Length: 259
View 1: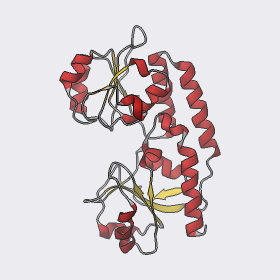
View 2: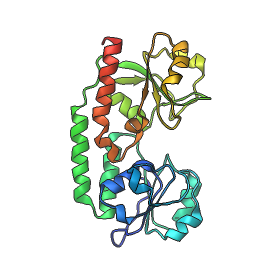
View 3: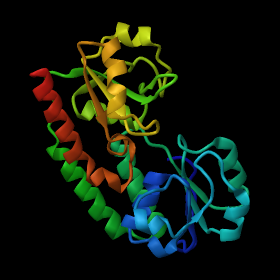
View 4: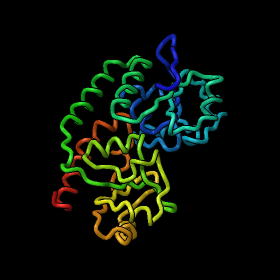
């Protein structure tokens, strides 16, 4: 998965470039060894406040990272930018994840556990995540769904990403699965796709209930919901909490669409 590295001993000074992986490091019991995080790393709330901020996920402050002298940097192929990672790799050990599915996320969890010497705790988290997703009951028959992550321009979720995988786990068929990654979608394309369900994510664009009306105008027959984006897209230890949340969404949709 991504750029493979070897460490002579478990790292003592870790910089995390990805919010969901930052939360994972804390849940692995590595709070004292995490020295730097991005400004978007918001969980666990009180504890990340105390950590040095090294910029955003796509604009690193290299001078700040140099000051921290990390012995391990953890990033992600999609969330971070190639040029910045290449620059860091010239000086530091950089480990990169590449996540498209739940199975990829569990492999990432195992590898981070091995790198940091926290295999036992990683195995506990993995068991909990597997159990949770084993309980998730998808809707049947499947529901044609559009999942939006941005407004002005509208951007939806296509295929080959963790959100698309989570939609399928719920029994939601992605209306834009023929497009890759995060395509721009015109109002006309949305109307043409004619989804039964439209999900508006709380991140990266902070969709709120006030935005439901503009989508309802375009698709009067669709059920439209604002959802917690972290539960669909965070692929670290947040996956422990995702199945119960996703089941709640499934049950609400079943009631509204009477399926």
